[in-house]
Image (cartoon, rainbow, N blue to C red; front, top):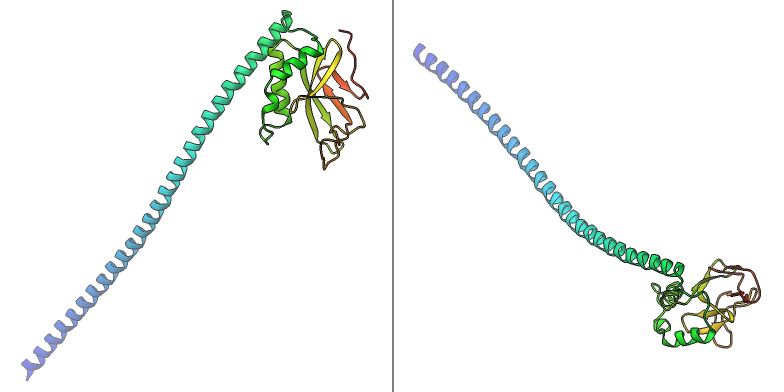
Length: 224
């Protein structure tokens, strides 16, 4: 009887130790699984972060290409402006040397306009009245004629650019988009209402050119 009790006690102790060991192992497995899940989540976060990083790298690459293109365009524009500046300096040198006449006849100007192609261009937002006037002046200077841009001011703060030639008969005003002779008068509309329909106030309040500011009602007859 004593032996059976002893064996039962031993079996109970062994069973308790086994149960304790199994419980400990189950806890370790649970911890291991939790650790694995944690690292899986961290790995997924890293994958997402890597995806975002790759997208950022791609966007930066695209932006870098845009910046390179802009730099090329800026360099091209710089070269173009440098050439224009050099031409302007050359024209100044030629003017000082007497190559550009201060006044030409009206008929010479009209003959020049018949050959010039500025009026054949189409008006666009990138090639407006200012570009028309600048081109005509540039071409006139290259032909040895003294001309400059005239800035006309309207009451609403807008304006219009035309060209004036210094002729032996006086100042000759030209609309560079049509080659028409115009007569800007302070207080009068610029556009001829018999030809053009205008939906804004084009009353001339002032016009300015390289010959000065003219708050006058008629063009000025220069002494040369």
